Image (cartoon, rainbow over all chains, first blue to last red):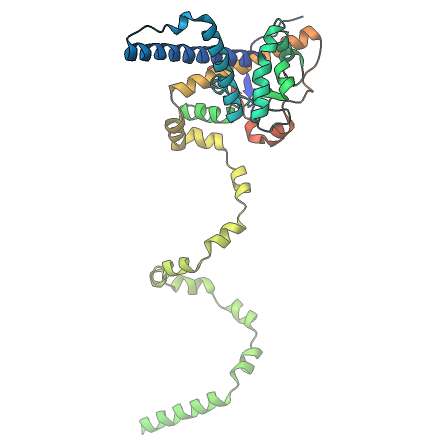
Length: 174
Length: 164
């Protein structure tokens, strides 16, 4: 059995195709980073504002229960709001993917909320909820199945190719 | 005396012309035979085309043209299909305009990252196919609504990595 190689051969435009595991994983990691960064900055800002007004230290970071509860609520808002708005989070937009309904229609607030609420389930069962991305024909994870959603590439590869072509020297023979 | 003769001749000719049925006369003439004897090229060569054009009010003619009607009769889609957009972008200033308007360093990096992501997705998918001894080539590429709505143009090749 010869190992598959990472080819540098042309990748066809994939708009509308089911997104793969690596792109989804990187997008999710980016989202966690962005959400965590915004949350931390917000806590620091509240601390700073409180100290400025009252002259006392609030130190929200040390109140663990409050912080965790705030983080859970924030993560819910972060994902549910963005998915219901345009089907993509910041990380997904960066990687050129988006969430749609199984038939390809845009997701509504209901699907967005269900997907957000069931996302932790995919982690809680030892990450097995994500195995569907590798095994299923429509690459849906457990939370996708619960919400009736799939993740597709929304990246306009054609525009990227035109941009790339535009940068080539016209005098260079192709 | 001479003037009198001329006046009589003019009067006679006038009367004759009035008496003749010109239409009946013309209908008897074999125009095809007549035209074969006429050297059209010679006539045309004697025409001052520049002078003629100078006398034509082009603006007035254009004003009378119904452009909308002409456009309606033109199959724009067919014309666009015949245009090699890649070659157009590559060989004209249009490319520079697109590059300036749509591409910065950030979008270039994004293109590369996304292309790499797609390449790695395919790599993982191929490995899974091998491990599970399955053929995923026949699987639907995406949701029906999205895959069927993606135009043929979107299947343009995009090189992975450094050549998005």
